[in-house]
Length: 404
Image: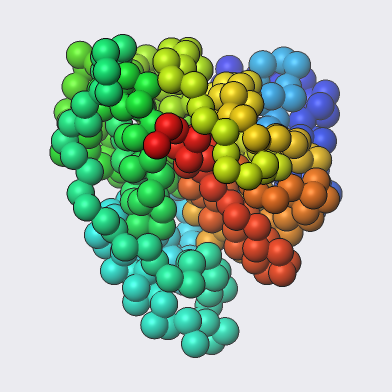
């Protein structure tokens, strides 16, 4: 952590890229301000409790990393600091209960589906619930999609096999948008890719990594290290947050006996758009039935964390009858950020409203993004703005353009 702290020269380039600084305007709610706080805690000048309100309000979007001319590894610093400070924290009872509920449900699809179904029953009493629980209910769709048939253990390639990959199926995504995984299998198979869906896989550990639960994150990640085969060309993620977390397994397991295995795993991880862009399209897309203008939203953990900006745009631009438009402030976080829009609903709502306004200003007929959290957040705020545009995953739109 000390190296990352020392690398910051407090130039201020990060300020314009920081969502919380934009909406709150406080120095301590900026990346350089938080670095000072973390430094003071590590040097014993402040307690973790003193710095907590400002560190907690960080979305971890890593917009500051893209903007930083000094190469400060803010993401690694934030993850390591939260793991260091969390055991010393004293959270209010309701905050502890909310975190426990989130950790016990979101990473487990069956539990989350049950919790979401119970949440729908509690919707008439939403205004009577504490802020975080009310915010959680507000993000649920009007109706949960049916789970559909179980994904096959192996999806064969169509035609000559060009690659063999393993797919992370995700957690929340399986419940809120199971069609994304089905579209992923169809798209990859059509491009000559055999897909393995490991039966023993689970949550990637992102939630624990972002909230300081180091032991919980390692336990979930270790399960994936055992479940996923290494004799594949890539380990595919179709959720930006999950892919980013799996690429951070070297950091998660640093100094442990699993460090080498975590590094080998991370080297295999690719976002679905990154993988297909590298592989190239064997089958061209068919024109959409009707011309469509879509706004492309950069998920923070795809762009800022993984550096993947051009790949999804190039793939989408190959679809005839599709016009992509850019969103003003497109690289600014939408306010989802894992469980952030549950724990900090006021700030998340301000960012969600801002994102919705910018999307509507483009005149787009639909929104495309590469992360389930962004999809839910944007869909929620477009609906609240009275403009419920279709919001879909990048892969869903590409799958629509496959030959019949």
